[in-house]
Amino acid sequence: MAERQQHRRMRGAGVAVGLLCVCLAGSGCAQSGAAAEDARGGDPVDLVREAADALVDARSSRARTSMEMATGGTRVTIRGEGVYDFGRQLGRLKVRLPQDPAGTAGQRPITELLAPGALFMKNRGAGVPADKWVRVETRSLTDGNLVTGGATDPYAAAEVLRGARTATYVGREEISGTRVRHYRGTADLGAAARRASDGNARALAAAAKGFATDQVPFDVYLDDKGLVRKVRHRFSFVNGQHRSAVDVTSTTALYDFGAPADVRLPDDDDIYAGQIAEE
Image (cartoon, rainbow, N blue to C red):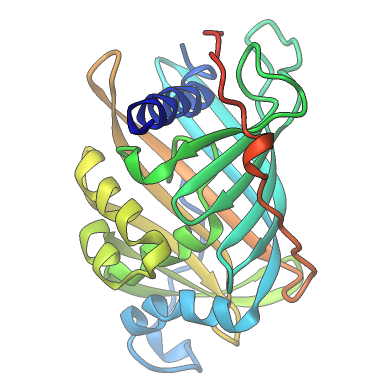
């Protein structure tokens, strides 16, 4: 039984990797500003590290994600939209793959359910019944599912900031009518894993070992309550096929804090246990 479960996890992981690879076969601009303009005061590194805690206090929000990869002269962007419950660390995203090079629209949107240690996907994998989910054990992925699923878990994105080594206050900006403070710096994934919640610690530790570098440049935009309104990470991982480093820019935007986020994970009977055909 254990051998069968391990086989299913490995097969599921291959499907998730395909979500990113099938699409292939900037940090935001801001005025440079003086720290004296930051009315909140305090050490920027401490403020950034505390951002994940503020999200838990806010309970939930709506989220938009984008993941951009450029390789071989081709630029691909995967977009997602949904809700997230920060207290339970559960989220639901509808992820849209881009058009193919011929201009034909991609496949149907993929529904993703995000949970500590697991990613559930519907409409992903040839031969999978329409009413079934594919489960992936994210803790076994070399990137901790920061990249593989085509969208970074919003709470994991914030917990990466717990590993901030440097952070500089850039200045005041506005996002969707909300005044924010822009900080720019670099986070260490190993340090983030040691400070992260139980739900993300193992995944971030895997990413620290699996990425080309465990140093992650970031830009984060915090409102006056310290809530993340937008965070952008630049991850670097090794393309297994070409053995070359690939840079990925992952952006998560959060809004409508307190919005209902009723996320229900699939029952065991709803999870596909059969063979997943190669696409």
